[in-house]
Image (cartoon, rainbow, N blue to C red; front, side, top):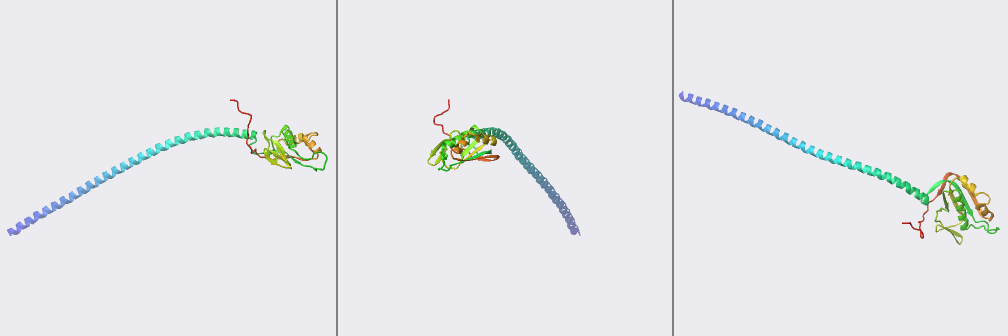
Length: 239
């Protein structure tokens, strides 16, 4: 009996020790688990904070670059605006110079004149010569024509007229009869000036040359630009 009591006592003691040990182990496990969770949380929060700071830094840098580029773009816009205004002024001057030099195609109202050789058997000189074309062109200039062409050759200050056999050279290009002369200007003024009695067209008709003159009241007359090159052999700028 004594031995059994001792065994029971030892069993109880061992049982209590096992219980205490179990409780201690469970408590330790919970403590470790809570500690690990807290450390993990803290580490995660730190990583998120660092990531946010890094992205904020990138955003600030990108915003600074964007602001810099916008300022550069604004400067370029101002430069382009100034250049555009200057270019418009230069373009306007160039357009005017081209107009004065005959280097622009023009369209407008005015008159058309056609000169044809007459019957060679008629009395007089029914053949159209370079001098005849020149005299008609000069009459048009005196009447206020703003632009003139002969067989689509633009008449400018340096235009030359020469007879070469049965054709005439104008601006160095050969043109033959009939001679189609187009002039832009006030139709009634041009027509009235060239059809007055005693004017050159009247003289040509008396010689047997066939003359056809028409007024054009609509902007349908096209005078092409001068295709040649201006050359000054004897004149130069004064320095």
